[in-house]
Length: 449
Ligand code: PFF
Image (cartoon, rainbow, N blue to C red; front, side, top):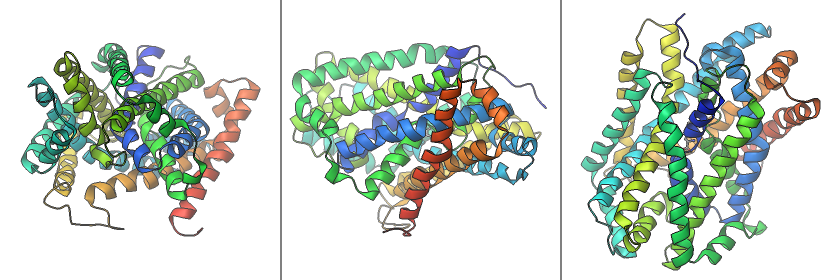
């Protein structure tokens, strides 16, 4: 067994896990999901899912990782042996690894869009841009497979070269500066949106609850997005937890990360919708939403090109740290189980993911008419399959495993909570999360109409 690296302290673990959680899910995906799923109805359900399912499950994943001190697959296997149940539970870890790689294949393509926007911003292309020009710009990018492929490749190389060196070396220091920087720049953007946008309409769109818009699909999307946004259900948080020292409080750290992650997403949403409504843009524009609206804001503010360059650089960084955590469970498994080196494992899996990513690139142009299931193209299929099925399924199995099969004493030791707090965790982990996820699945598979 090779020597396992570890985080320096609670801060570095927290920043790394926050770095995994904060990414395109908050800045790119949440805003357009809100617009496509009835605004405030989605926001309300999303917040409820973060609190009642996300937070307890993040605690579960960290405790599994720290107890096992191994990658998710071997970790769950040894915990199952310790609990005298079938080692086949390890396949939860296997499924998580596959899920991570599938997500990474499209995540890297969107990360590529962000990289391309850094260069557009730096070249001053947003100056004085109108809403129509901004939409045309974005459509031009999507229509060019070569450009998309180039940036997707750059993003993949960036990601896998960090993974190849081991996640806890350089990341710790970078996270320390860049996550706070992302918040600062977001506040500038928010201030600007407040002064020129339509914050009042944006606020009521996002927070004035309209219960009539709650449909099963909206519930499903909100639950799926809570998993995606908090990096849950596939072992990323578990593998980071496995590098965590014993004396750190899991509950406190989890709450900080979840609050930070959710707040950031909602702030981006407010900034965007304030601009959307002020410029008569469509809230349900889909995945292109931020790429069409933000240039308009940056293009009209003082030093806009500079701020835009900085903003997209920080988004790229946030995406990068998340992408690394998507690959880490698989690479940790290969390194801990085979003679293949970290470098070779990273290169080979990087190539495989890149190849799947090529089909995602093409699904935005040449192959956009190819539908896989339910009229969804390749990108949409991968996105829906992972967010609404695989991540919640992984989460459900982990919650059941920790709640019903692990020795209660071990769970108690890891969480180290007061009796009441422990009971609260147990109630949400053992009942609320599984029931919510199973209910959503029953609907999804048509068993409940
Ligand atoms: N949480 C990341 C985001 O919001 O962008 C995406 C992600 C990372 C999902 C790691 C799942 C994961 F395991």
